[in-house]
Amino acid sequence: MYPAADDNYGLDACSLLCLHSQPPVIAMATASGKIYHCIVLDSEESYDPEEEIESWNRHGIVKSDGCHSKLSLFVHECVELQLSLLNEATGSQLDRSSTSTGEESDENENLSLLRLQRDPVSPYQYHCSHNTGVHSISLPWAKKLQGYCLQDDKGYFDQDEAGTVCHMICTSPTAASSSPVLGVCVVNNKILGSSMLCLTSKMECIVKPLSLLDRPLSPSTTETDQETSYESAGFSPIRHLNVGLFKSQIERILTRNTSTPLLRAGEASEKLSQQDCYQLLIQAQEVLRKEYIQKQNKAREEIEKGMLVAPEFPQSQCFELSAPISQEISILKDQKEQQNQHLIKLHSISVKLREQAEVLAEKLVDTSDNHITLLQRLEDLFRYVHNGIPVLSHAESKMKRELEGIDTFLKFHKESLEQIKAKNKYSKKSPRKSSQSCQLLIHRSKITLEKY
Image (cartoon, rainbow, N blue to C red; front, side, top):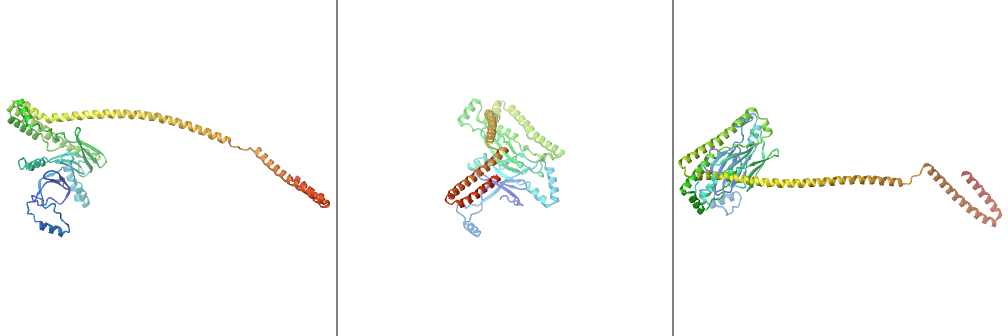
């Protein structure tokens, strides 16, 4: 890494991100809240293939012949993020915690871990999430550097140009009471624009629309269209160049160096003291005064000076300056139309759902009525079946027992009668034996009759 640093750019790197530009730019974040933007270039050292092969073989790794050049990182700038809105309060709390115990100091060091994520729309922009919110970093110099390298040094590249840092979302005003961000996503739409979705530790989704002025403007007209526009406007291309410089000057004046984040602290804001809340209010007023009111007043003074110096083409200046505003107005109109269409669709869907709910409610009432009628029919059927089962009373059961006894009595006498008939036939053949057997049978029959 160049240029060389005494601390070798720290030993607490926590996240790396490679931006797909030409040449590539690597963002290296440290736990102290600093981000180094490094340009990846070929090293100026001489390449010795034999030495490289020996070094790779020494470690037991086979080196392919696809890449021979050594790469170096040239640190272009260092960005230090404001992780908390209340720096003084957090600093005092961190000092107290660091002097108390070593475990608490380790926890405070973990509070500033940064997580870098590439922007899906712009290759020169990325987002940084941490335990107290989300920052968005834009690198306009990377785009100019790419044009400068691809055009063979014919482009323009300002080495002193710095990146733009925007504090998008703040989930905790102090670093001590952290509310980490679980995930960040950017959704892009040609009409609705880009929006940032942030998922907090409380499973709350925060939507933050990105700035419309950061979008690329409409493509410039052709040279013939520019010439006709110059002729119709009545001034030369040199004056048009002056208008462009004047426009860039006004845009440079209106460029904001600091931003006010969307504060979603939750329970952390309830624990703040009145002094901390007052400090937040003072900071917001200061940003509004310096970054908005003062710069707008300065831009108005520059416009008035330009109109006094060159009063022959103030309308063209106003047209050039109002182009981004008109573009933003047209975008907002498109957004409003699309939102109205969505509202109409949602209204029609709600009407259909209400009608379906009414139909289902009627069907439910009919089903409940049918259920009640079926239950009544089942009760009647059960009662009818129960009544059809034969049940004998006490007198009937007594009579049944008597009839069963008479039946057995008749069966016994029938058998006795058959025996008597058989004996009678036998007695006719032998008169003595038959008389004795007849007396025995008559005696037995008397005994049985006495029993019944």
